[in-house]
Amino acid sequence: MLERLGVALPIIQAPMAGVSTPLLAAAVSSAGGLGSIGVGATDAAGARGMIEELRARTDRPFNVNVFAHDAPRADPAREAAWLAWLAPLFTEFEAAAPQELHTIYRSFNEDAEMLALLLETRPAIVSLHFGLPSAEAIRAMKAAGIMLLATATSLDEARRIEAAGIDAIVAQGIEAGGHRGVFDPAAPDDGLGTMALTRLLVRHTHLPVIAAGGIMDGAGIAAALDLGARAAQLGTAFIACPESAADPAYRAALAGPGADHTRLTTLISGRPARALANRFTALQASVGDRRPPDYPVAYDAGKALHAAARAKGEHGFGAQWAGQGAPLARALPAADLVATLARELAEARRAAIPRP
Ligand SMILES: Cc1cc2nc3c(=O)[nH]c(=O)nc-3n(C[C@H](O)[C@H](O)[C@H](O)COP(=O)(O)O)c2cc1C
Image (cartoon, rainbow, N blue to C red; front, side, top):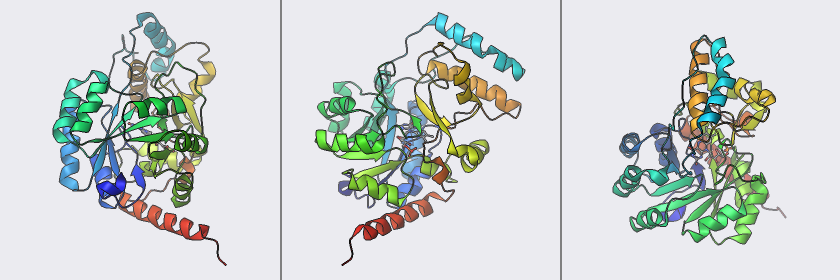
């Protein structure tokens, strides 16, 4: 698929809503990889601006990523209980907790304007996270010549992706930074690692597989290709690039000893996601049997708490998403990072050839 698009390297810079930027994606695509933008946290107008900026910066193909989750169920009692539990933290930062919480992002599955925008602007690739849109939306995007990717964290999700006519699967292991792409966050999660998941999907589906989760360098990419993946998708590896939107506190946390510790948590957004261990993830110890509101309603509270804390100089409530390979992140300009990854990949492949 990447070859057909003229993408030279089997390297995809992961879409990272709020962190990846058109500048980052353009640099990666221009350097021979596939750059991605995440538009899951914006609306059609915001996505249009990002796509236009990307097109102005590169003539290479890129990927636009949307969130295809089920809409949250309103649960005023649970939301009020959640806010009451967080209230002492707001008090610590001399701020008032929000009175109520809102659905801050619209799912792609309910966003006719976003679908219309993608059909109009026709990015080479659209990738789907958290589930699948309607058969009609899938048909329309394919008819527009858009190639479709979707994240799977299990064989069951991969089979649903294959049955829906998607072109390739992103096999996202438990090591991955950011949100797990699980379709149903309330269902049991086997937490498969990238290695086992990639082999499962390569052997038990007919679609090309892209490995994601914990891949930080050329040796990791070579390992993914050896497992039968056609490409590797790297997120955490690109956070420290100057072209990303990560703020200074996030960059400092990623570069510090704290990067050795990541935690999978639902407390920040309402869906399981892997982040650098910080004051927010530490709340796990005291959450008891409270459940956060559905995604993305809980994220409204999480963002408000982060804003209140940051205003007082405390950065430990940020959504500092990162995968288990975080200590291997390099703060290089994206084009240099892609060139480094390509060189390391070539070296790893040469080293793998047995010498007589
Ligand atoms: C900061 C951050 C934000 C992310 N946001 C998204 C997103 O908007 N859409 C998506 O499909 N995946 C998102 N992911 C997950 C990536 O697509 C990918 O699965 C993950 O980065 C791979 O693991 P790694 O971080 O260890 O490389 C995000 C990951 C990170 C680190």
